[in-house]
Each structure stands twice: as C-alpha cells, then as structure tokens.
Image (cartoon, rainbow, N blue to C red; front, side):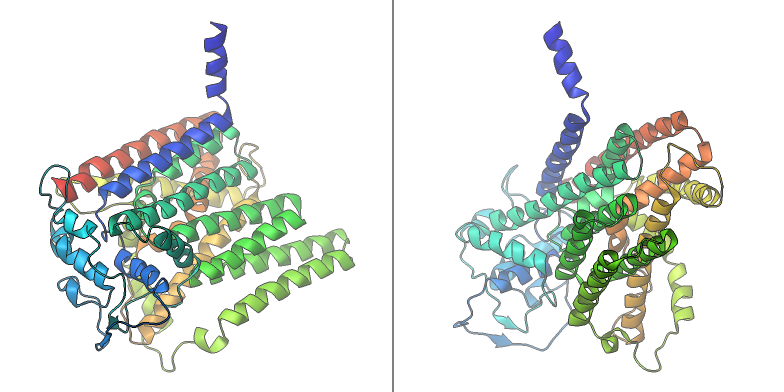
Length: 479
C-alpha cells in the first residue's frame, strides 16, 4: 500500500505532470506529422527546397536551365523551380491529387510509387534557375540543413520527416517556456500546467508545428522573449534576464524578419526600467551603462539588417493606410478562424462551431481585462497589471508589424494582402491564452470559479483537438 501511495504522490508532482504534458505533445505531434503527407504543409516545398539549396556543392557542375521567374503553380507542380528530387517526388506521389483530394496507396501501408521515391534516383539539386527558395534563409534552415546532410544517404522521406521532427522539438520547447512564463506571472503551478496543456492542444498550433517552416523556431523564440520580459519586470534588470531578452531578440532576427517587431516591447522594457530608477532615485553608472549597452546592441542589430529606406512605403502608395485597414477589418473573422484551427477540409465539419465558442470567451475576456486594468482593486490570484500591459504590447507589436508589412506589399503592387493568415500570429499564442484566462478570471472574480473554467477549457480544447485530427485530418487525406 505504501509503495502504491508513493507512486501516486510522485505522479502528482508538478515536474511529472509537466513532463507528461511535454511527452504527450511530442508524441501527438509525431503522429500528426506522420499523418500529413510530404509537402502538404504551408510552403513546405519552398522551405525544404531552401534547405536542399544550402546543401548544394559550391561548384555546380550539373546542367542548369534558366527559366523566367514565375509564380508558384499548384496545377503544374513539375513546372516549378525546385530541386529535381522535390519535383520528381511530387510527380511520383501525384502531389496535385493529394492537394485536391486525398493520398493514394498501393496497399494499406505503401504509398503510391513509394519504392521509386525511396530509390534515390533523383539529384537533390536545383537544375532550374533562379530557384524558388526563401529569401534570406535563416537559422532554422541552416540547422535543418545539418539534418539533411546527416541523412544524405537516406530516402527523401526519412530526411523530410526528420526535419519535421526538428520543428516538433522547437514546439515542445515553446510549451516548456510557456509553463515557466505562466508560473512567473503569478498563476499557480496547477493553473500554469492546465494552461500549458491547453496551448499544447490548440489545433492550428499543433498542425503548424509539424511543418517544415521557420515559424516553428519563431514561436519558441517569441515565448522565450516574453519569459525574459516577465522576469525583467518581476526581478528588475540582471544579467540572467537581460541576456535572455537580448539572446531571444538576436535569435529571432537570425530566424525571421518578423522578429523586428520585438524591438517595440524591448525598448518599452528599457524605458520602464529607466523610469523606475529615476522614480526611486537610484540612477547610477552601473544602471545607466547597462541600459545604454542594451540600446546600442539592439540598435546595431537593427541597422545591420534594415535601413529606413527599406521600411518606408513606396511614393504615392495606394491604398492609403485607412483604406487598407478598412478592407482588412472585413477579413478579421477569417483570420481568427484560421488562427484557432477552423478548417473546411471536409463536410460535416464542426470546427467553426468550436471557434465560435472561443470567440465568446475572447469577447468576455476583453471586457474582463478592461475592467481589471481600470479597477483599483487587485485580485491576488491574477497577474499584476504591469504583466498584462506587457502582454498587450506584445500582441499590438506583432499586429502592427504584420499589418504594416502587408500594407507595404499591397501598396507596392506586388500582391493583395488584405486578408492575413491567422498562423502569422501564433508566436503570441501563450501570451494570448494567458490574457483570455486573466480576463475571464477578472469577470468571475474568484479563484475557485477560474479553476473550474480552466478545467472546462482543457476539456474543450482536448475535444477540439480530437475533432480536428480524427474528423478532419484523417478523412481529408485517407478516407
């Protein structure tokens, strides 16, 4: 009996439960990764082609064919500018059919022409120039290139899914960072674990993190930056949280240009720190030098990567900002549906109904946050208001960055980007989820009610996740 009791006590420990959440997430993602056919993820063919391009020999002694730059075509996959291996693999597996209907198998276990694909008869080189690759390939692609090189003698299927595993590892690390973030803003250990589990089940995050895409790394970096910011606000500036903030910002800049938006909350943190020291009359050489050093490093990185000319809009831009935002507002429901995981891959699909329930929770949380921020009373079971303001700033910074970039592209005449995919905002998922439950907690005003609602949210997101996997993904590709 005592042995059973000791096992039961061990299973109740937060470290064990956190390990269980991380392990469950990793295994779920590996299952999802195996379910999703090769090249079925968002822009996976371009990201994987970038990885193969990085591994090409410097001396290109094969025949190269120059073709005019054309936009990617789903209806003529072979006509795209990818490596020979990607193009021929897509042809062998009939990728166009998979995109339009579902995957085909020669029997229960072997995909169409899988043996031919495994034979490695095609070169992993780009023979059509200019190749269709990600501009300014970043840290994610270079890390993935090592995996591609390590498994160079293996089938493309092994190499491809091994790199998908890299994305899953970054997703798992993001969940781990999310737990420490939630715990440090003042949520109890139990509630931090519940919200972490809810995040791990979010359908769009779950599917997106299985893709070969640099956003998997970006999501982890944004969560890490948010954690550093919270520690900064909680403990004041020290070498640990200062290094965490700077390191996550630098890594973000190496991963994807979107990370430039982190400069807004970063400068805000430094300004808050200086304001606090002036208020406390504790300004000295040490604090001044530290703040200036951080400003110099961040500014230096910014101007190494950007200049004001590249950030400026074209002259006589059309549409105007007001016109762009007006048209974009009409697309917000579609963006939000995509963000939460609502998809229309199959008939009799209730994902939009799940999203509708989330919208109600979001609306209530907005009211709750507004009341909480402008109330003089502090609820002890909720985070301090400065943390809430920091989270709102992170959300606003990403929105401004994405919308400004879309406006610039649209005004330049390259593309119409009034509608923004919801996946672009997933890097702030942990922050967003925390705000939702803070707002709801502010409305119910009692910890016991919030605890009940958190458990309800966990069951709800678990049901939503199961629905997407078994009622949407599997029927979409296999039934």
